Structures are given as structure tokens and as C-alpha cells.
Amino acid sequence: MNLLCLRDYMILRNISPRKVIFSDGGFDCVLGSPSWERIKLREEEFLAPRNSEIVDAVNKSVREQMIKALKQGNEYDKKFHEDFIKARRDAEAASVYAHLKQDENGRFPITGIGDVNTYTLFVETILQIKHEKGRAGFIVPTGIATDDSTKYYFVEISAGNLVSLYDFENKEVIFPSVHRMFKFSLVSLGKSEFADICFFLINTDQLADIRRHFRLARDEFILKFYFKLNKHHYKILTSKW
Image (cartoon, rainbow, N blue to C red):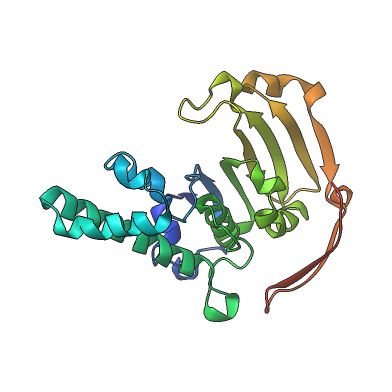
């Protein structure tokens, strides 16, 4: 069995799934828990722990001037400026890479859209490297099934490749560092005519309650769409779930 546990650094660095040697067409099992972070740098969050005065600047123009002034400061300020510029450039480069079109050798034709989150790139990579008869499991925000930026990905997996989706709200603090109202899902992929679905769970014990489960056949998702993959143009004709 070919088993792979993906790590975040494999997704955005120059490690292409096409260069992985598959003995039988892909990995039999892929597991992962990717980071749920926007690629775009949140400048206020980066600056706040080290210089609150810059964060409190009256507008963006003044903030940029204060950041530039760090180059003329002491060693701490100079190092801070260097770290900030590097973080911003890294974020911009990652964003450009994620948004490359398929005819530009882009790796993420169905998730490299809009304000990209790292977890979406991760789950598309899983589709690229998983054997067609293999399985995959991962923990991601429930937005995987509801956000506009992931609708094409969900169309892809709901057409017979979704085994289960269990939606949780973090009310009982399953993840201490995550807000209590945040919703995340356990997703399993594999060839399947039906998907097992649960919503509004708050702990794993509730998975044992069969009344919380319902099944949907791939035809019951009623997602009809037309797309031209080569040009990455999609037109949703009807959408009802």
C-alpha cells in the first residue's frame, strides 16, 4: 500500500505531484490536517506583536511611511523591517503561484481562485496524487462545501468521489486555539455512489447517533454544470443542494 501524509511545505514549494513516482497510478491512502491560513499577508496581525504604533496609524499611507522608516532605526527596527518585507514578498509570490492558469502550468485550476486559503490547495493536491481507487481523509473548514471559492472543487468530489462529510462547530473546544463558533469538517474521499453527511455536530460522540446521518447519492446533489477545463471557464447552470 502506498500511504502519504502530506505536510504544508509540500504544497507551495516546488514539489510537483507530476514528479512523484507512482507504482500503480497514485497513493492508496492520503491523510492530512492542513493549516487554515489565507495566503495573503494580514499586515496588522504581523505588525501588532512587535510595533503597535504602526498598526494604529491613521491610514495605510502613514503606515507604509512608518514601515519604511524602520530601515533608519536601530538594529531591532532594521531586522523587523527585513522580516516584514520578506513575509510580504513570500505571500505575494505564493499568491501568484496559486493563481497560475492551467495553460501556464498552474497546479491549482479549481481552487486557485480569489482570496486563496492554503487548505484549498492542499485538498486539490490530494485529488491529483490519490489513486482513482484510493482513499483520502482530512480536516478542513466546512467552507469546503459552502464557500464560493471552493464550489468547483465540491462539484468535482460530489460527483461520486465523496464518501463522507461530518460538519462540526467548535462549541466544546475540540481545538483550543480555534474560535468556538468556527465550523470545520472531517472529509473522506473515495469512489462511492453515496455520501454520508452530518451537520451541526459539537463532539465526536454524536457521530454514533444514526439519527444525525443522512445519505445523498451523487445524482441527488443536483449539481449540473458546464465547464471548459482547458480555459478554466465554468458556467453553473443550476445549483441546488
